Image 1 (tube, rainbow, N blue to C red):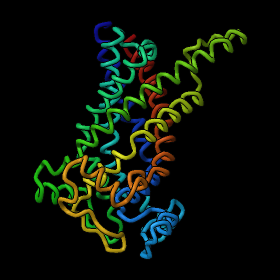
Image 2 (image 1 turned 90 degrees about the vertical axis):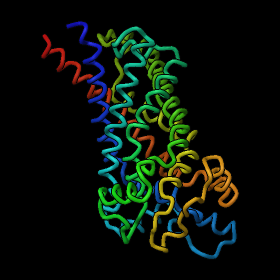
Image 3 (image 1 turned 120 degrees about the horizontal axis):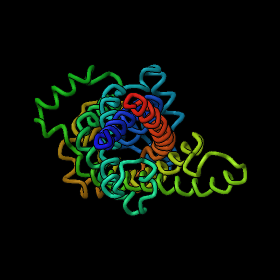
Image 4 (image 1 turned 180 degrees about the vertical axis):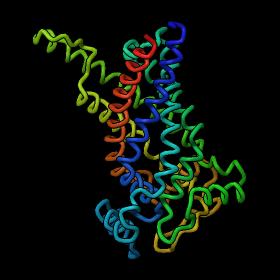
Length: 335
């Protein structure tokens, strides 16, 4: 029985990851839609930027409140969940693969399959584990990320009415390689993003455990310093996700641009990204910097950070509680 425990814990990590990712994705979908609309808009995304550049043509979206009102007025409430099905199909396998691979790598580094031993890994091993897990999850779920971006960015009238029609058209016109445009910046983004996110999450948990230690002794509580409240887990996830998103946002913008190359949208959404607009990732970064300035590399940063913070907090908190419940349920069944 004991030999099967590491395998059971890996499956528990995968199931808990899928559930937590699905919850987080659904809750934060409106912010994700606004972020994507900003990222794929070639024109400035703020009224101040339009005035500074002396641009007289208006942009489709010029701020969080204006974008929220525009999407609600033109597409109704369902517009904020556009692309949510492929988003769920991306996030659930993504977080499932991510947490399972993360668990296996941490088990290898720590020599134990117990989660309580994983949090005490050396900081650099936590960062490496997160980066490797993020890479594996990105490659495994990338086609769904592509479909999510296309469906969320197309607006009205729709280019593709269903996820299937988008998938068929992409494969027919670009082949199966067309399901992986922007994979290089995605991997270059996820290495620091997942590394920072998981590394800082473990760091914040260790700090919080140290803060808990004198309080539990003073109260004579039976709780150990290993026990974190739901609020503490939420705050740790909030802080780690905010740090990661702030560092890696420009590469996410580049990835989104590659994903919507050639997409025919209504002219009211502004200029489209033409085929062969960018000759590789470095060229894309340079082109955006030259034509749109530094602000272009940070389009959508406000909804992105606002989304990343609660998304990370919900994901980590839901993962901790789901995995704990599955672990206890598995132990009772195995008894």
